[in-house]
Image 1 (tube, rainbow, N blue to C red):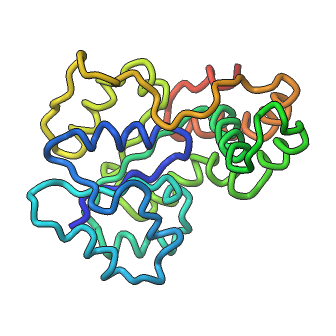
Image 2 (image 1 turned 30 degrees about the vertical axis):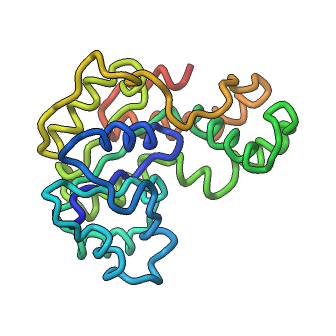
Length: 233
């Protein structure tokens, strides 16, 4: 059966997390990464989805699909009806950086270089409904918390993934009830997975991004009771 879901956020390290958890002998992803059932493939039916995880191997079965983070409340209720005991993992990243990384990925998919895309192109992407919804972490968390008990949802920080990956994996293991098998000498622990072209946010775009996200960052800091002031710099 399905035991846990990685619900986001997009461009916040979910591919890295999938890669590392796949190395755990007690974890399996029978449907691969990003099944996209709850956001795009529900017409296949929950029986089809459940069958993906009906693998009698004694391991925990997961589905990491970052698009689940901003599912509508009624869909989350359907997730809960099918899997009330599922554990949830959500990684948050500075939404300004997340929006830039997401836009760069879209540039690549449009077969362009970052240098070829205009400021106007990027601004349109930042203001798109999809990008804004993916970066509104407080709204996403409130919807999931409205359905699942708070202790079911582990919120992680992208900064910890980059700077202290062992501690982040230890938190994941504890949340999922797994033995922590990760060690500091593990190959690739600090290597990015599915990273975009490493270019900094254009200075000309920063005012737009701060206008979109500064208030949301402050509100999220209050909601999580965490210091997110570094995200505003």
